[in-house]
Image (cartoon, rainbow, N blue to C red; front, top):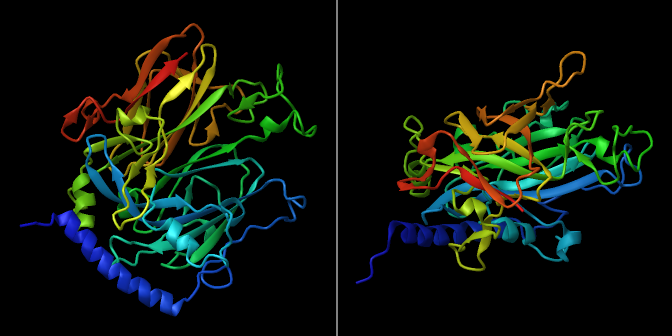
Length: 417
């Protein structure tokens, strides 16, 4: 006699309910096209950028999916995923009805896709809510909140109290004029504690205009600048120059909360206690894997990459490593430390550490403590460290585990060639 597990039963139920819902949806909306429900804005020119240079466009879906923890446990998540622009994908939304829904459904990433723009860029970020395939009873709206960004227009801030939330089947294009370099993060702000615990978190950073000083005479170059040099901030003195950069997002999941959501049970907000501790959506040793971690599509079809961001840090001896560290944890403060080279903290919360007279206030340390919503930019010098491997890890030792499995969790490696 075959007995279905709770997960298999839920998948079958979800298939049936979702098929019925999809049938009704497609009756109401016979084709998902730019002319109908899914309309993305990506201009080829604007007043600020008449030539088109400096215009960045990105399309995300908001929905659900599955991820795999380092001990093999699968967790149900909400998050965002990339929708390739039609010009990049080889199709158009009008030629392929349902393209966005098919691409974005059950494709949630942990963390959400990384967003990188240059200072002075205009970013047109479209978000389509594709619905919850595994929980078709949920009709949760979603938003994008660029945490720490001084948004002049509340409508694009993503806080539901003062801006638009995006309902299932709808699309909104957010507009940002990126004027402040630094390390940020983004997340859904609808029912924030739930949606952030479920995984709607992503890396986001802005590279400074000083990087363009070789090609733009209006931007002064710092002393000693050479073509190809890159900087974390507009420092004026070259002190934030780096050779390689890595986003490191601190996070953690409460598996009981995720299981309750998957099993259509009351959510245990009051007893929320995380037991999987993550860097960029993975626990050690998966943090050091450079391959994309995929979870099979529970509704059948091609497996979709669910945890695409490795946390392995590699450099050549003599390189300056920039770590863009952010924390979007909803339950606790976190401390990251190294067991070798010091970290020079150059910025906190996307602000360069300078006094009122512009003098650097950088400091060196072996640990950085961040609360939820905070970020830090740190530089690690690797001169004389060739052939060595170090660890970047949580100094909260109970977080060096994958639930009950020890020697895992919030840790990765720094490998110096």
